[in-house]
Length: 173
Image (cartoon, rainbow, N blue to C red; front, side):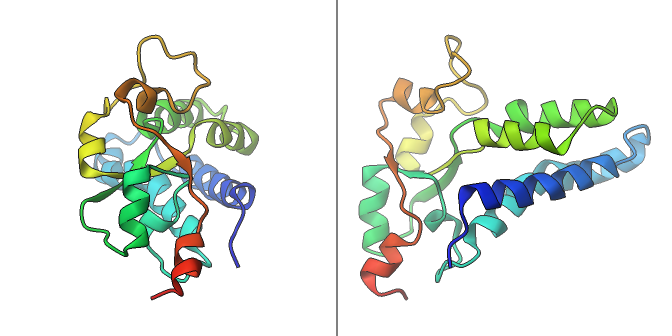
């Protein structure tokens, strides 16, 4: 059984809200200690939720999009040289925004859901394609809506990744 994007986003938003609202933002030492965990919480939970129900629990099989070159490698079950990538850098456009609202007591689950629906998109790409991408921000002329803008700027085509279809077509591992 595969979970829908809507189900994943809802579960993710609920847990991320709970996590952020329990952080003592005014305790500098605590926040220093939890820094890496705070940065990775959303991505790690997203991967866990997105791989639920997949016969092969690897993030490379769970992405929303895939490049033609990466698809060719996955079909051959060759994951060497493949990368899991966020279409929109999550730190700047999701984590920082949510943390700011949480710190000010203005974060809501609905806000997180809306932000995740808009900006939380992933792709499986090759290492070579990954190197072509502008890593930490969207293009200067980005309209705030085109989730594929970094990829288009780098000349990297994206296909919708039918989760699990490669595994089903190949009979699984």
